[in-house]
Image (cartoon, rainbow, N blue to C red):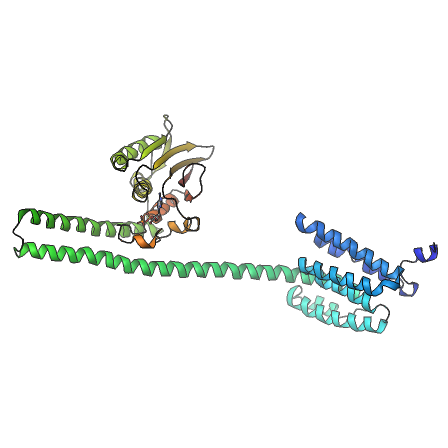
Length: 405
Ligand code: ADP
């Protein structure tokens, strides 16, 4: 074994430069150690192979082309995973390719310096003094490496920030568009919903007024139509009014301390008949003790009855309904769930937006798409949050109201 060759890892004439390059490995290492484990280990492994290949080239120039190819592959893989390493690794690689021709190395160093200075100017140092210092032409590329790394890291961060901001903007504008669209659609539906009962009311009342209806039975039927339609109109106006009132950040609520358990029990009793009509089975878990909480009774009644009404309206006969109130260390949790129709997961969040309805085809079922939006506004006014679990452990839908204690 040729010990001399073994000891001489790098050609003597290159002095300490190759060692400086290797020392610079701590820079990619530093970045790599900040990566999550799933990218850290493959990165470390590739880096190790990289170093071995690097050294091997000096031991055996016979396989130079092969090693260069291997190193090119590793470079590409590494640069695919780790942006800031890209410049560094490409630099080392280029050095490797040109190490036998020093004049090319200087050219390379020069172009790297110019490129990195542009990068540094754009990203890291707005401070002109540092910029002038950085302008000193690097005799050796390694001197500029930390700057390149810093710049490229900053560049990566800026890039990620930009990407994130752009993504947030995109989501926001999409959301806005969707809401606008939904509002337009709903306003059109609302005016239609208002117009239809008004036309009916006008038609029937005119017929009655002009004495066109002689049959007593028919008269009664017409009067019932008029009454029902007027109820529909007042409901619509009522919901719109409440929503716009709650939407106003200055609107005040009238909180009073009272027993939440008793309040819920009484509310359920009021809905009992409606549940019975649809043969729904109620599973209720409300503690028998008192839980005193400060809330606006009228608004809370509205918030919870909106969910209960939906449960009755949107589910088939014989649906099981689960209502519970639980108390944890810092939260009161009201859950209203069912094992009925279920709600599509992608609708879960948007259902609480005003004018959003589950199924476009059911426009004439008397809904306005404001019920859950009103519920959310009321819960928010109590500093709580309401959301729907579309995949609960029990049943198919679970509305959860969390109230801070
Ligand atoms: P509206 O009832 O006027 O349509 P809401 O805001 O109260 O408006 O409800 C929004 C949508 O949520 C409803 O159109 C319905 O599709 C869906 N929904 C609410 N509760 C349930 C439930 N328990 N099961 C299935 N769908 C529901």
